[in-house]
Image 1 (cartoon, rainbow, N blue to C red):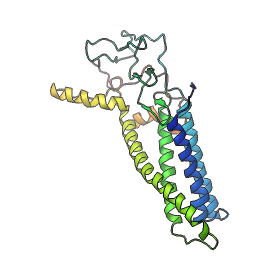
Image 2: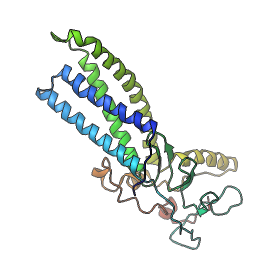
Image 3: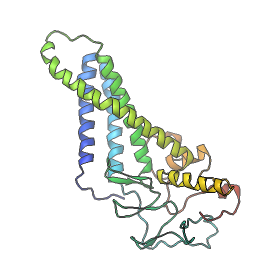
Image 4: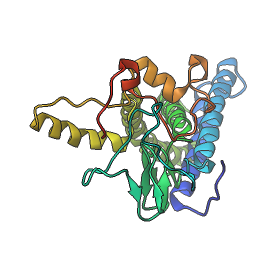
Length: 284
């Protein structure tokens, strides 16, 4: 499902940064290191362009895709034996109900104060895509971060490599403008490589645990309360590392780096560890 997108300064900044890094990498770093008309230059330009295209495409899809809406007709069925878990409020033990949306919340759904509505399997609201990261666009957001990390590291390597080449005759006059490009690129690429790598590592951890960012923080509190009461807390949606990967990225390993999401289902019900163990869970 597509959504309407209004002007966003952070999104504009992202587009400008991507454009600057791409143009600098191809027409400055690659040209200076290899030359654009040589075989290594053409190969690197084609590969980097491919990575950049996938990065931009996945960014666009995560930007324009609705993360998942709770249907107005949704009603939890506590007598449904096929749905072994129902999330309840911390206080009172009632089924979770959003007073702002006037809707029951499906498992893993949360209300976003920025979007002003409930989002299915909400992870977080990201200002850089001016959208929530949720059930319908989480995979494509994850894949975007993967390609962004590859592109930034690739560009940084080309930047450093091109610095080892002495300027040719006739390029001395343009050295001042090139120096500016190198300084700006370095100031962009080094922090981006670090920040995006940390972000990717964080989401790899979440994917392997089949958690969202919100569920991680809720789990920390739940674990503390369980230990305080002499119990052991386990995340109800943790099916094992490989099963968790297939739940988020898809059953076909070759589609893991592609923006396909046919496997995700409705987002109203998720497979739990209790179904594998064949036990009756307590409400959470």
